[in-house]
Image 1: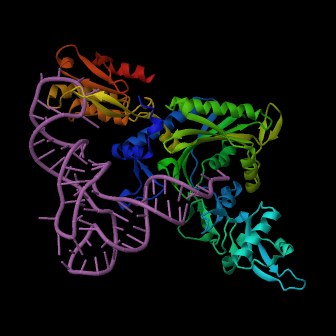
Image 2: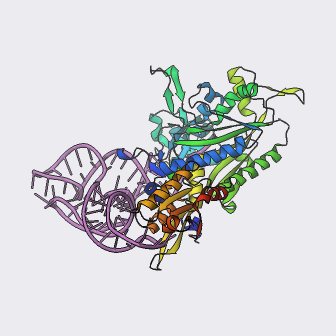
Image 3: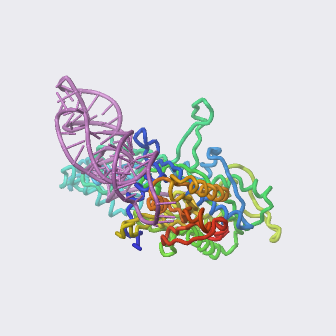
Length: 517
RNA sequence: GCGGGCAUAGUUUAGUGGUAGAACUCCAGUCUUCCAAACUGGUCGUGUCGGUUCGAUUCCGACUGCCCGCACCA
């Protein structure tokens, strides 16, 4: 078996997904639409299986987590409280010379005045030197000198005290842009005006397009959980520590959607907010959650060694976060984030309490005190989990054909619980009604319990390969022995291509046992 | 957003300023026996819009999409 993770390209996956009906580019008949994808007949099965497994393992399989399905459009104040309105729409400026992009609100400009190095010389205004907010005085002076040189005034002396009159880049006028030297540029006038990059999708609620009715498509499902935290407390008979889980679509106007379904503008999340006591041992709980999540990914078919923990360094954490660990996976485009597990303190509940004016405190019966619980937030990307499962399952090997010549075989080694079809049923030959009839009976029996695939077309080998490529674990073939002699059918295994014969009456029990049911 | 490359059937591709060709896939059929078999037949294509031209899939322009870098990713 090849170690496919090293060799597999995204293009191979994209092609397979298109060819077999897992994923199509959105709106393809209109030329496609960047950042959006559609899940086809097989894709929706795989995706649903991943979501079902998650819900089973994190909601139904636990006593301390309950589910939720909140609306995608929420009261706009939600996003003011969460910080998304302010933090999710950054003004940006690009430098045409260096091709660098800056957060405009982190760029400052200082006026550059210079004069002949003689007493009483008249000062000349040369332009504005741009620099990042953390630049030192020495660095700013260097930028000023570069600006002076670039306008052909090398002989002049910079008036250093004038540099102190700094302003934010976002405040400069259109006319001033031409005289600004970018933070890393050597020529003036290369910065574009600050442009808003709004990462939240805006819409209007109500048929009248009134500015006061602006609303947003949620950029994360988590805020729906915080929004309903009080309702769940009041009705769910839950006690801290407890969690609320939710699966749903989220939307972000990504600047550069890329890498297939890895970064999309419309995507699906599986999130949990796990509420804990403020003085709980959050480090231990965080560790526990990381392990639980890794185990879960392994249970849906990802090799443990392909999952890595990336700990966010303290200085890169959001101000309200105590810790955050990403789980990353070796995708075809590199080791990339699969899930984030953050310790968020009580920032969100504090914000919502303040913005809503509603008391969101929890009364702890045991401690006899009120507090706002802290949270641990495991945030899974459904589409990323899908891509990871697909990447892990993809394999190529060689199987001898009917002439004994080795031929390349493409297969998806899905764990049976996530496979779109669990079993396929074939009559050995299509033109023999007695074979077809018997096979149909078995197929109908299986179909009541699992997604099953019927195929009677073409050579038997071709049908096996077709199932290999969509990851069906078992194929069941009815032949003449089944109807004329022993009543046994052949069950062929996807991973080994080995066959066993069992009596047709035992087929359902056999599959159930293999499924672990 | 920037720079570079690419765009012909479901896939891989050939070709031409004058009716677009193949292989595989797919569909139908023949076949009594298990790994993309063989044979017969069939469906499906020049990303979109505009320009030049008697005529454009081909030349030109714009757009869109995809790929690779850069930047961005609360």
